Each structure stands twice: as structure tokens, then as C-alpha cells.
Image 1 (cartoon, rainbow, N blue to C red):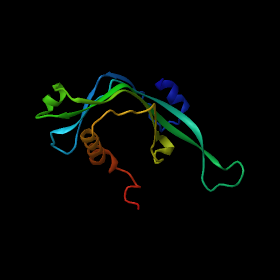
Image 2: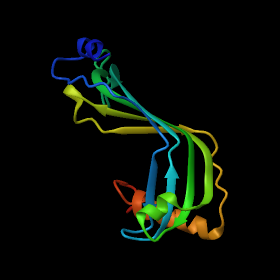
Image 3: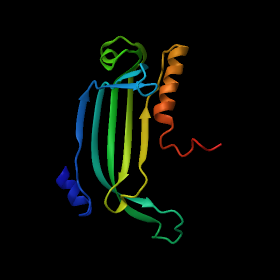
Length: 167
């Protein structure tokens, strides 16, 4: 695949191929650094692979016919999660969090994520992340819901969100 990708793209593009499959990686998401309460995510079957592609992209503000698009080089990274489970956990140590019994919140979640990043002559292009999944049903108590929201707000919602400070 790397040879084909190198032949398709410009010489300044480094063709690196990724094809990884991981079975049941566990991730801990504490509500705060050093905290003993949080979420434990069993990512089930996780796959990551990429494809180097060349596309035509429309340019903004171009009206003249034939000058409204440009060729771009992208590294498309595909991430698939199947059979993901999320539990709330209260742990005294990291080892206890992995070995202990948690209260299940999510079960058998499937998600597909596509990350497009510019390479070569389009390395400065904004990163695009697109996700797709089925219905996400969370079976949790009010306390678990509040825990989930705290973890989300502390770890995910505040980073890189240009809309968070807008009123």
C-alpha cells in the first residue's frame, strides 16, 4: 500500500501506512487529576488504519469557471470501535480501577471515526474529524450521569473548542 500511495502523491508526501487492531484496551478517565472516581472504558475491538488520498476541494470566493477547486493531499485515518463498554468506578489505586468491579453505563457501543489531515502541499489544512455510530443508550443513575458529565467537561469539552467561550 505504501508504494501505491507514494506513486499517487507528490514526492514531498511521506507515505506511512497504519493498520492496527487492538483487543479490549482499557482506558481510565478520572474526574480530575489524581482523583479516585471516574470512568473505565473497555474499548472492545479497536482498529486504526489509514489511506493516503488525493481529492479536489472547492475553494472559497472563486467565481471564475475552472478556478473554483484545487487538488489536496490527505491522510485519511479510520478508527473503528466495536463492543465498547463504559463503567463508573471508585478506586483506591490504578490497579484497583482495572481489576475492580464497576457499575455498567454503556454496553456494546459501535463507533466509526474518520480523521482527515492535510499532508504534503496541504499540511496546513484544518484537521477534520467526523464520527458515526448508532443510538447511544446510557443506563445510569443520577450520580453516574453527574460523574459522566464531570469527566466530559474536565477532559474533553474544554480542549480546542472555539465555540465554548462564545455566548
